[in-house]
Length: 244
Image 1 (cartoon, rainbow, N blue to C red):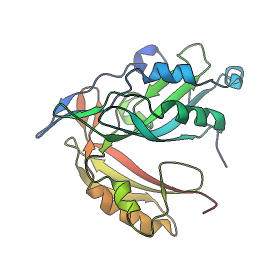
Image 2 (image 1 turned 180 degrees about the vertical axis):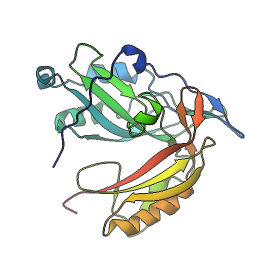
Image 3 (image 1 turned 45 degrees about the horizontal axis):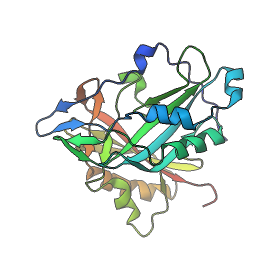
């Protein structure tokens, strides 16, 4: 059963500005994919439910998208914990095909898979639409605007390696139903230093082991806090629809 999201208002506008991150490591210079003018485009395309104004609610829609080297988005998946199904669908349709600022390695654009939140509010103390470059799982440690690790799709990405297995039936990203989750520690050079299954039951245990192996071979744009690349968790998620 879906649970209501209890996010409070994010606060002053100062926390909504995401610094353009750019950092050197021992071997490479990294710049994560960023939203560009996507916030304005989403604001124009999505109609926020009127009941949110009446209830003074702030809702986060959690999304994942592939960002090409051109910046164009594809394979967008969104999940809305607050049960506003139309808002989830509107968000997914609005983001598909938008142009983000692409990720870069040593000045060359590379395709990545990016997780992010679209935050909607009818509260007059903040903008109606805000986009944040993370899913919020590390917000307590790093604040609202940290940039989560972004998996490079010019390398061997974990889901493609998992899906190549003939027994694979999990779908990527969050959804209703059973989940398998594997956490990888991504270091400041974009390498996965360790992996651990944190959720898997029954048939998903085998899949989690496959994902562990695939994730070890993945490469990332590292996570950023401000201008600094830092070691940061990345969560690989499979969902299994209830009717499977």
